[in-house]
Figure (spheres, helix red, strand yellow):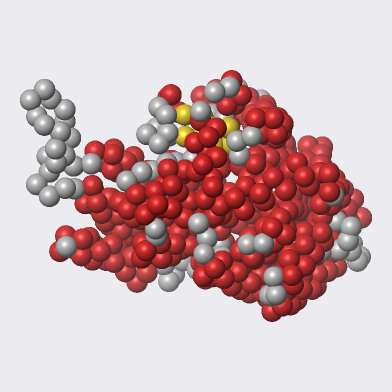
Length: 112
Length: 501
């Protein structure tokens, strides 16, 4: 139970970081933290108490294996997260070139 | 198993192949991106039209990817709602691709634009056609990441800012969606939508239903720009190049937001009266707040973006009503809105192409110099404002009648009010931009090139004849079947497994 709670704390930390930080890079880090909390939660969901790796062999019985599907899915999810993060960082670099600052309170061209 | 279901993966493969080839060859061969973009979208549009015919003969079609039978493998499902969305998306995409041939001349790397455009299209078609929860998330992200990049395409100051805001909000929305999917998976131990619906019906929803519904409303509501989650839209949509604004406002928010919301709430979870009233409330809120924010705008594209929020409110209100007429009206309005809003964004792009400004106060009398743009935007404005006999009138009328029939007089009143305010704000657009005296400095401007005129003309033509869709015989094959699919609700599972045999 504690593990799930810590996972929630991690997610909240990420969301807090996105909402409250003023630095563009810190916001991106917040997104990454929140993303990893979700991935971690997915792996936790698949875990069985004292489970073993889901590998088939002649001798081993098919009991108490952890669910292998979420592990495959999380790999996909990490790759997707990588793409989104790479794009965010690229945009942040261009923002710095144009505005000369990472402070979002100074990046305010759009209003209304 | 018939050969007919082999058409399903083509919707994704064609657009992905187009994107791949464009990125490979387009850099060296000048004419290639234009041809490839138009050709791919044309093929996709043809495929989606043939899908109407196929579903009329065979009913629901299911394709198992890699021959792994559902519920173990990934499934693709083609039912009437899917067909309806595919036709809408690919029709708009085709018109936008033609328009981009001329419009994108002023940007340097056209092949990058087409690559991202086709990737976004692949993502949208994927979201619509998939029958698997995690696959839905993957395609959602493909479409979203491509759209973040497209919003930043011009790499000017404001475009980057808008893209950053959009990307952060969009990523957060996707995370909530993923979290919802994780919860559902942990409860049902399956990812196939049909199988999930069966398991949920057997096990009952209990508390997890509430949790998951809230997560999905947050996730997909962010993508659909419903009112509490709308802050990114008025920045992101105007900042993109005009064809992309047309795609984003026209179909992206609908396929990623409204369609996914519909599919999951009606077909998988099964809608309850609590959630339909939440949907109606959010819809009405978006409808009214969007139009109030729109009235004060002077930036042409920003004004249109606020109207997108308002019109999406109508769609959600119609679908949330849950009555057959309400859903019919909602879907009809979804189709109409994607046509006239893309047309309006293309018009704004044409004005910007000719004059270089988006500020309504600096325009005036442009209809004299740009007759095609003037006429088509007049048609589109009348459609969106709901003046008979254009298509927008009929769909709004159906939604209002449905609200009255369901006894929701308050919502009907707000719908009428929002429609009147829409009319007021488009009167302003027409007055300041296209009517009145031509200003001195616009004497030299010319009408836009041929392909832009062609694509605007086609969309305007659909606006005029779009009301026909409401007619009985046409409605039967196109709208009524899609409505029926939604109304069947969790019987979706049964239908999918039946067609597998």
